[in-house]
Length: 138
Image (cartoon, helix red, strand yellow):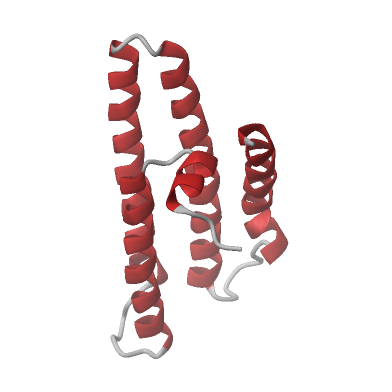
């Protein structure tokens, strides 16, 4: 079952612009992963490959701060704080997973690195939070 854009915006708590921002970053990231794995560009680090995702997180945080300030000024204090907390929670869990994965890929068996279950655990927490939010929305 595919979700409509309205349902995605409602469940994820992101604006439409933010969703397209993250999709664009994912597209650029996918291209960079393919370039890195095929070794078409020598000397490209994994940190450079993950830059589009980090940039999308930063821009989304900036956009969320602006929207929350605007909502607060318009008198929607509760909505502003809830939106800010929700989006910052989602972005921070996503960022932790990205940084841990990038660190594991960059070190490449040089040090005893964490297991993939530990790296993906922020996404498991995020999925549980999204399930709770989906039940509250409907």
